[in-house]
Length: 193
Image 1: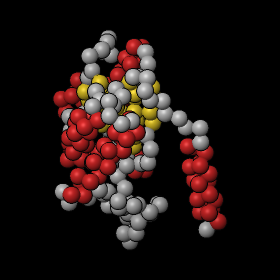
Image 2 (image 1 turned 60 degrees about the vertical axis):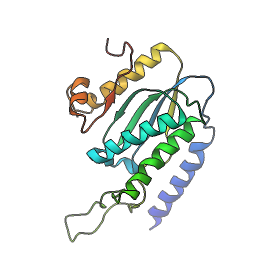
Image 3 (image 1 turned 120 degrees about the vertical axis):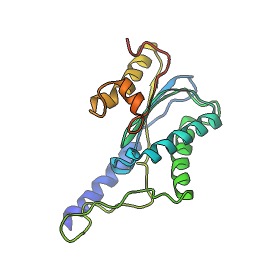
Image 4 (image 1 turned 90 degrees about the horizontal axis):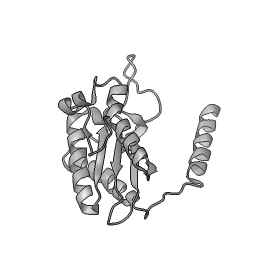
């Protein structure tokens, strides 16, 4: 019981200090390398229907907020995007719309937002921390301003190679062919040189 209180207190302190000093820089017409994760890094995007829905909502949000997607990869438990700054609103607003759009579309279609809670093999009890049935995405997102050609190529290479490094596919080309577990879009660049 005492250790649980310490864990809650540490999470509280972490959340307070995590946002302290956090500044997002918009308005410089930079590209942005964005990363966000599924709730507690659960592999919720491993589901083909979830992945397809994400891509559909990404396209809708891209058109609504008028930004360019140079590259992306949808991994089982997280997403990387390389995008321009939106012409409408901020990138934060666009990412919020993307995340909410995915969850709302799932709820409207009757799909489960979360899979079942993990269970132990003994007596079917749940283990670990409680799973919230209404959460699909982890709060917040990581944003890296890409302001040089060198960094743009580096981030595109990272996007293309991420499924390979994780052992999901043997090459970026294979990721493009399989498209069920991983979705990769290549921007025009020297990223594969």
